[in-house]
Length: 279
Length: 252
Image (tube, rainbow over all chains, first blue to last red; front, side, top):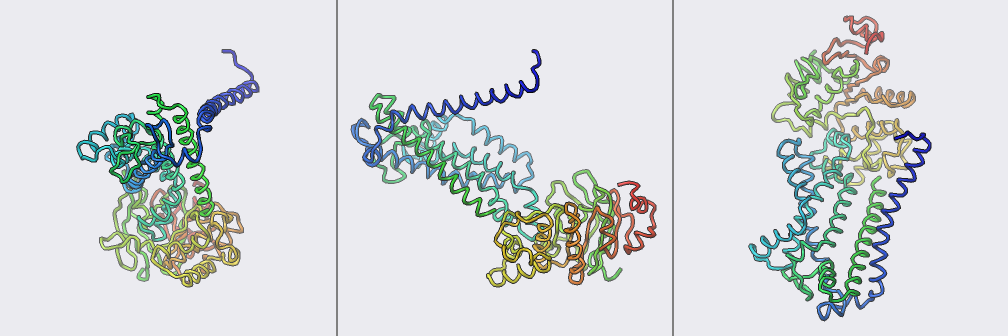
């Protein structure tokens, strides 16, 4: 290839990268626009607060919102402490020997497993073997396992990015290991850890395959963690797949997107305030 | 020497297969400023981190020989490392304020040791900052981040921060290497003032600094102690040719 002058090269790079960015943003905007145009007209207070009727053909989606929130909350409540704890152990309490590497490798493999496999695993273990049935409990546990690798990985990265000097300072001032972890390392790593958890919330809200096998697809309002429940994503899937109601499907999709956007915005807002407070 | 506060005997420090300090014998006398000079990688910093056992945190660290403080083996089985580190405050080459307020940086060690109560902490923070020579500059902005201070102020904050733990020894690892002459002078003045209450070990790349503030000076080379003696003698009539060469800038 003939070499172009550095100025032209510079210009070409700028334009090329700009075009790539434009395509990315364009696709995103198109998807959101596509769903919002079909979904937004369906939205009303009633759509949000009424339970589905006629298998979802009419009525709202209230019970599926409750199901999604319950399932996600349960999954995060289980996965966040487990994952963050594991990450702290792997980074702060081991020298990175063979055992650590095996655990890390295992977690990474877990991250690559398709969610429908998790669904099947959850179905066999929680729904049938342990007898939890199709329930929020089974679904929450399954989702938690699915989220664990992401939370471990992002927390580990966040903890590793805390300057080593902070630890030395804490130790040299007579801080114990635990004090160093809780008072120095974790506060500095918090933004990264929270980002990982927020991503996980998003993934768990959007998860369909893993929950349909484990939490089931009941449209009734769940009354306990042993109730079967349908999440918004599953609801969308069934409405669209079985051709029950396209408008209601898109309405549900719109709510899903708005919810995830809202959660992200809220978290980053809170995080910025937290960071400002600490530095 | 019978009045030695720290006695180092035949001490070697290894990291994996690498030996950073070889068969070191050195005494530190109470209420002196002991300067340690020597070229890069001569084991000066490793020696400081052997004293407060920060080397323990490095993978594959092991040692031979003994270090005793007031006759007590600091690598002995019943030593509480956390307690030991409170007795030996350390200032690092790069000032590292924790990402907290000035006040909380100073109160950090005391809080970890279990000190509670606003009044006690307030008094301690003020007292430590005064001793560290920073109080007048920060008294009306204790709640701002320690990381917003200038380099010299940060280093004095780090000094004040260890004073708040009430140590007996102060270990300084090239504390002024990144500072301007005026900030350096302020730190040196502070050290001279602190000498009456503390025993100070000052590792420095700047031989003139040792000449200015140290009572005795030790010269390290390749992990070995070449010689130690009163600063005036080391700088005017060293026993060892290598010391003379180093001080004249022939190497290092």
